Length: 286
Image 1 (cartoon, rainbow, N blue to C red):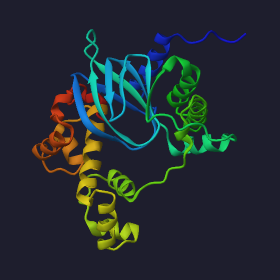
Image 2: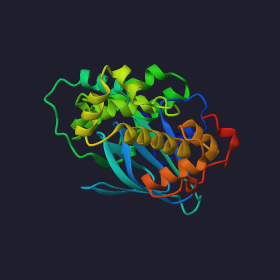
Image 3: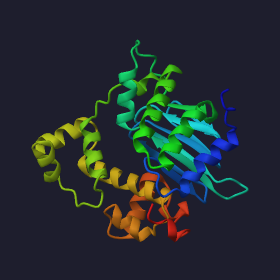
Image 4: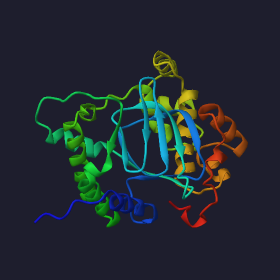
């Protein structure tokens, strides 16, 4: 006889336990103690986030979605969003588990799919996490045990199911723009003092060609470096308790003042307002 299906509270508790699991990798735990909105946040690749505590409001030019605990937030392709994270009124905490749908899992799902490509579906979707409980628990169990090879098939199975439900853009092979390529390279080493010649050497392009192609994509190297650094700063601020000075250094800014000024211009609020810095020093290694 099959085991009884998981209860919603049990699923959320199991996923929340990853926040304190030192062996688990391949996900992000997004936490905050204060309500905060951020505008024009770039999400570069598909991901699935499960809201565990608090509330989330997300808007794009064409969509507006509100999420409560137990909702899954699916991003099917690269996009920019405005988001508000609201801590739970009782616990004072906002908590989300983010599952990046890695290219290995997406490629495996493409290999498994042998039918006509389904409809692309919207950029963003709200789904009941409990509908995918067994797969999510398999993924969580593999991560908690340090069995990362087993975690990827669970994600591939999840992608296939999501495509079956009308989110076919997950199966489209990525075609990165030059801007995306540059942003990813900067994101891999945000503290580096990036110069045009660094990318010219790596990409085999002249300086003039690099500038011209980025201009055709309506951006510039200066903009991409700033975006990659600030995006990494946002991740550190939400997923660690590192002091602001450490965050600034890790993303290539010489002072908290420099980071704060650029962060405020980009996202519309001060980085210190997220409220995680120094709250749990023992977790700084995450």
